[in-house]
Length: 347
Image 1: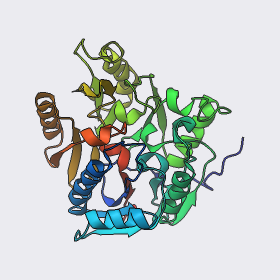
Image 2: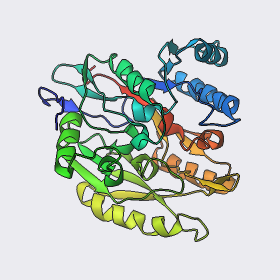
Image 3: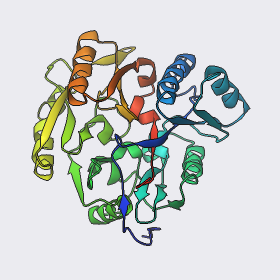
Image 4: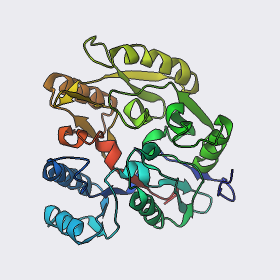
């Protein structure tokens, strides 16, 4: 097993998503197979998303090929703070195929960790353009490193203070890293992310979630010692039994590493499309400068309850609800289609 590793991890740090951004990266949607008969609706969703983001930070948009460039330019016409890049992609899930940007404060450098990508265990082909696009985005950092390990951005989470969360059902899955053992995955992750501790959360795969249990659907930090966790108290929900005690298990594993620990349950909505339950989760939110974008799913009572929870947790941020029902047909929400580029430490 070979891994291209950093020459040193002195001063290396993966900042939390709520820390200042230099920019957000997105990939313009164009894959009809992902959103059958819904692509124009999804393009309107992306237009709203880019408009919100461009008001608070620079937005880089991957739009490769004449047709995709023209479609993106038409929808985003007149928006400031937006840059289009002629970079071809297979799909729009840039969180998973894009690099993880980290700070190297000892040299005031931005480092891009360009993980391997294989479309969630080769579930969807082709994925070569997405893998190549991740490498192109990584070129915007001063230094790019390519570990020989499959890691999707939605499979890892940090509190910005050295604590990393993930699930074995993703990173240790034979469809990702068949020749790796747990301690080697931990070493590579912590070395490249500047982490001090990796906590494995239990397997918990929402109905029809094709990620094998991404952590960004299950548990997310909102500050260094506060974690929101997907929880279900509705016995009619198909994920009820799996999620009922999930927050208790997460509390047992994570609380001892937080000072003081504060774990908050988020409800899980029940969203269907032509009778199929979709993997809707309010944990799939996105921090940008001064704001937090929270997915909503057309269930007014539970949407409003969740937005209120975020408003209480983040009184100094503008909490923006964004209807993700069209996007969710492709089995993802707002966190899945956004990639933060952090600012260089000390600058």
